[in-house]
Amino acid sequence: MKSALRNLTLLLSLLPLVQVHGRRVRNTESNGISVLGDFNHESSFPRFPETIANVTVTVGRDALLACVVDNLRGFKVAWVRVDTQTILSIHHNVITQNPRISLSYNDHRSWYLHIKNVQEADRGWYMCQVNTDPMRSRQGYLQVVVPPSIVDRETSSDMVVLESTNVSLTCKATGYPEPYVMWRREDGENYRYNGENVNVVDGEVLFITKVSRLHMANYLCIASNGVPPSISKRVQLRVQFPPMLTIPNQLEGAYIGQDVALECHTEAFPTSINYWTTERGDMIISGSFDNTIAEPRRKNSDKYEAVSMDSGYKKYMMLKIRNVGPGDFGSYKCVAKNSLGETDGVIKLEEIPAPTTVRTTTHFPTMPPKKKGRGRVGGDRLGRGGGVGGGSDLNRVSSSDKTSDDDSNPEYDYDGEFTLPSNRPPAIQDLPGAFSGSAQLPVPCRFLLIALLVLVCLR
Image 1 (cartoon, rainbow, N blue to C red):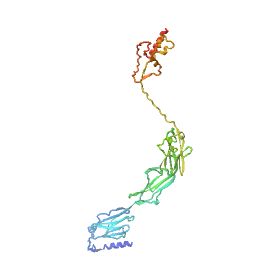
Image 2: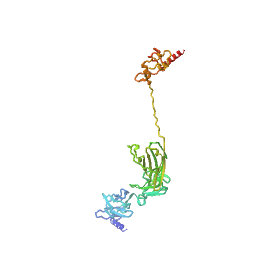
Image 3: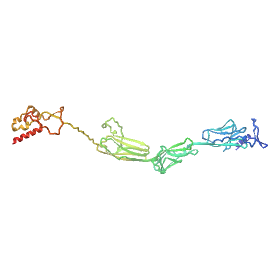
Image 4: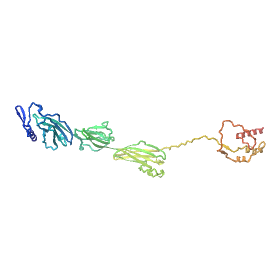
């Protein structure tokens, strides 16, 4: 209060006015300027050609308030903080003790109030006034905005909860204007909230009833108020549950020598320990695979190859059995364990018949080859045991004919020409002699001739 009175006294000391016969006369200043003016002459007083623009500045930056006065003449300009009634400057002098405030002017017309490193306490109305009577002034507002900030001590940290319980995530933010707070998943996926699939939940609190494994994700608390930058905090939500197992095919078939793969899908958190066993309960150990080694020479450990791939709380298991043999048929079990429990599933491998290979043979038509050599003329068949009507003639066979008779396999001339078969009856040939050794009759004609001779003899 005393400081305000002192400043007011100083201001009044600069404004000595006297009344002379209806006129207000200003005392002569040290610079020799005296101002005489009629009370009713408005043009003789200073005026403000424009308002003081409101200024918005982010906390920590510098602010500048401008005041323009025309026709100032010998009057003086002062800056005053309205809400606290604090005189900041008078004409060329800075009155306040705040080191962040300074003054500048230009051409005795423009007066600037500088505030460095603006704080929230600087927010408010500022007045530019001229020491006329009555006093003339203009006001401008300094708005100080603060970007959002998340209060860590009042905001949830990473959480681990059991499935089907309720969970509450809280995010507290400050700033000016008051920040808007929302929750969303970091991966951008929708999630179940109050019976609906949502992408964003407004408000400082995210309350999930009967949380499930589907809620397991990283959540972002995002605070914004139009003052850059917006800010966010990641909260990791982990949901614990015992292992669960699904098998696409519980019955697999394979034939001897085939490679077969058994598949199993599990879900668990904390992450489960997964492995395969035989129907005897022996754990199956995966071995290395070398394509350069022949199958019979592979080690026993190379018989199986176990593969496991993780995706969050889900895990894919595959057991590959190479070169299936009779002893490989039976049941296989995939097992998943964690601190909350264990589960298993059985896959049965049965033998199926191997696929058969069908060979297809294409036959092409071929032409019969032409025989080479001479045929027999009833030597043995008619001559033995005494022939009828001149057996000596019937038994007359040349040496060349004997040679032909002794040959069991006739010879064929594959290089000679051959004649296409005809559907017409064979032509009748003129025989040079019925009993000639050089006769070359076709086989049917021979039998016909012999039959005729027999009939003649029987008569």
